Amino acid sequence: MRSTALPEIVALPADQRTTTRLVSRVATLSLLLLLPTLLSGCIVGQLVGGMIESERRTGSKTVDREYTGLEGKTFAVVVSADRVIQADHPEVVARLSQEIATRLAKHAGASGFVPGASVLQYQYNHPRWVTMTLGQLAKELEVERLVFVDLVEYRLNDPGNAYLWQGAAAGQIGVVEADSSFPDEFAFQKQIRVGFPDQEGLGPGDLPRAAVNTALANRFVDRAAWLFYSHEEKYYPDY
Image (cartoon, rainbow, N blue to C red; front, side, top):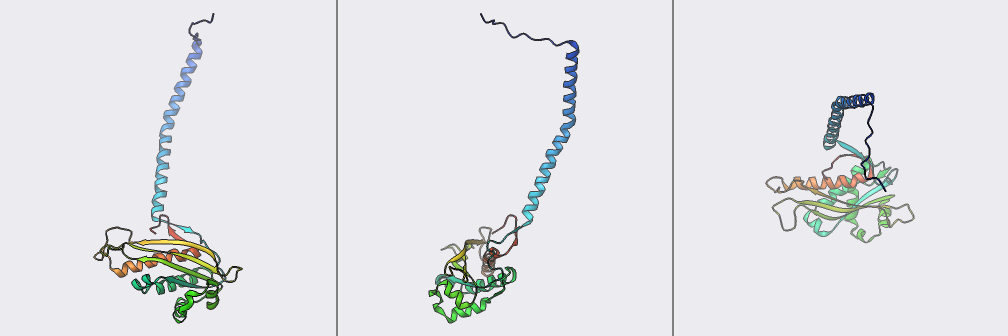
C-alpha cells in the first residue's frame, strides 16, 4: 500500500541554516539598497517621457513630400470650382491658383512654371477649357506637369447657420504628366480637407469674415502645396 504519511521534512545542519539566514539577509539588504535606484530610474523615465511629450506638443517634425515629379519639370496650377462656390467666394479660385503656384515655384525644385495670373487669364480667354482633356490643357499651357485642383467644397458656415463660423475646404489634388504615355490620366491624386476655426462657438463678433476666409484658404494652400516638397509641420498639427 502507498504510504499516506506527509512528506518528510529534511532538516538542515546548523551551520547551513546559519548560512541560509545570512544569504537571505544579504539579499534583503541589497534589495533595500537598490530600491532607491530602481525608484529613481522609474522617476527619471517618467520625467524624460514627460519632457519628450512636452517638446512634441510645442515642436515640429520634418514631413517628406508625397510627389516628387515636379523636380526639374515645368508646371502650371489649374483650379476648378463649381458655380456655387465661385458665386459665394468669387476670389477663391484666383487666390488658390496664384498662391499654390507661387509656393511650388519656390520650393518644389521645378525648372519653370506658368504664373497663376497667366493661367487665370488663359481660362478667362478660353472658357471652353473645361471641355478639354487634361493632356490637351497641359499642351495648351506648354507644361510638362499639370497640377489640377478640383475644389469640391468651400464654405465659412454650416448650411443654414450664418451666426457661427464653421469653415471647411475640401478638394482633390491631381497631377498629369504630359510627357508620359498616359497624358490624360492622373499620375498622382490626393484628397485634402481643412477647417477653420478650431474653436467652436465663434461668430462674426469674435472673428471678422475676412480673417476666417483668409485662414481657411491659407490652410488649404498649405495642405495642397506640402504634397510637393519636404516641410516642417507641428508634431500635433492643427489641420
